Image (cartoon, rainbow, N blue to C red; front, side):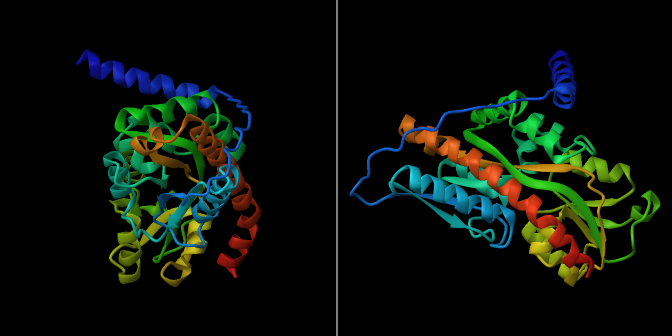
Length: 299
């Protein structure tokens, strides 16, 4: 009982720190190793999303930076569209060492490190800049480090973005309108509890399953950032979009700890720095494209 109480107290304390802390970070660029005449080492990176999504933008930049800074010694190959499994499956594969890496939405990490749940609290961050200060600061680094207790290595926080509601039933203009809607949510206790508290019939479901369920009409709605809604042309099955911005969702450029630890130390530094730069590149890409994507949604 005392241990459970301490866990709750620790989680509350962490929540307060996230709300209050403004983190800063800096780093130096690792030197590239000499060019190698041998075949490059292939690193497989999985994603559940398609090639139009910002995760793919991030992964492409990450791959380019690593290739450039290792003089072609490492080749990060991208596997989108859940070709290596859903997010939970990919995390478990990384734990077992059968998958090298992936870009994973922050939601599933709660099942491994409960402290990740603090980032999913509704209306925690007022804007993107506030989220970045926490994620890139000491709190973010501390929580990423906890993944190592579960055979995972978090390199950097990428962007998923502020989440918004879509549905096929009715416009949502106030809290009453959302009640009793059957909405897909991430397999994450914070999201499930938050939507149930609003009277929603929350259905936790992997994204690949949700796409089919939305097309078949077995669920009525879903919630995701504008980038995802646009990339998957959700207007084909969802007539109503509400820019609720009810939660900011991060993502993690994640490695199998076994794979990461097998890399030389100087290469590890290159990967970490490249991941952070790719994440920042993706954030800028999302910000630059969101207005155009919203215009497409309402056209």
